[in-house]
Image (cartoon, rainbow, N blue to C red; front, side, top):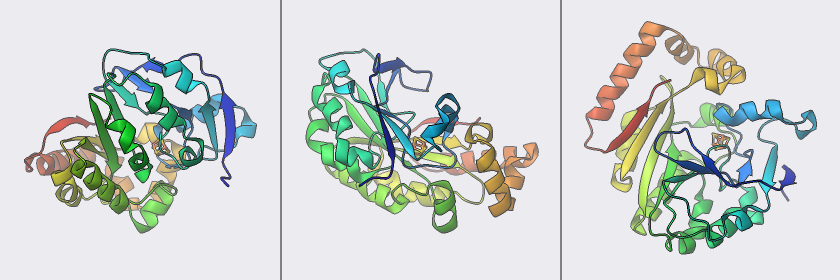
Length: 261
Ligand code: SF4
């Protein structure tokens, strides 16, 4: 039984206009995320929630009427699932909310899924019914201490790569979202070499220190002072970005975007 605080809500609408690169709409089955990444840019939402919800990562709002809201609804333009939750976070196994959304939604909708979880494999049967669908994985090099501190409750990167491979073998269009890129902690060469045969394209994103919040900055400063030194020094950071771009450009891969904040 999950320890997560579940709050059932009725959403007014389910497709939200997106300001994110590439997507016209976002679809979030949940608000909140059990993956509990320390750098999560959606953590700020906690400020707008009652204090009895607890910390980010311990509560999830469940849009229980989402499957009804998407029923036979068609929107034009790319729909990203999701931005303020992972649609395949652990609780989805039990609730099957994302699955019910996929069952009901118009299969002509152009869908892009971004996740960190192998649970997406459960829905292959439904995903195959879509005319235009792609599945992306956030992949970075966090292991050991960095994984425990920054991404404590999500599947390992090796597991994500394994699933990416399975999805490619199943004929899906796939992509890799390399994020958050942090000096000394992210090995771009290693990530690209391990994923390039299973990714149709890439997005790269350098850490957004401000978006990641105070707790992240303080942890990085304490636990990885070298990384912190680079990202907080304009000149060093610029050099790091330029060197990283050189590495990215040295591979024959399709890059849709490199986000620098
Ligand atoms: S998986 Fe994504 S939405 Fe969930 S906590 Fe991590 S960064 Fe935030």
